[in-house]
Image (cartoon, rainbow, N blue to C red; front, side, top):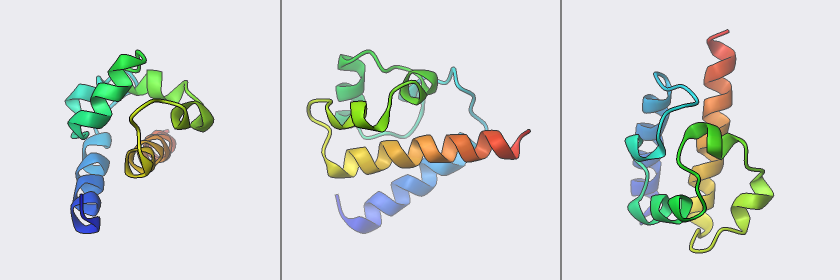
Length: 87
C-alpha cells in the first residue's frame, strides 16, 4: 500500500468515526481486510474491544504490520478525540 493510499484510507476512517460509537463493529469501518482478519482472530470485533486493548497488546497480534498498527493507533486516537468533542 502506498503512502497516498494509506493517507486516503485514513481520511475515510476519520470521516466514518464522526458518526460512530463504541459499539460499532470494525467490519463496518473501511479497514484493510487483512488487518480486520487479524483482529477478528483475537476477538477484537468492535471499537470498544479495540479501545480496551493497550497499544502494547496490539503490537503482539500476529500479522499486524507497521502500517496496520499505525492505522489502529490513529483509529483509537481519532475515536478519543471525537468522543471528547461530542461532550
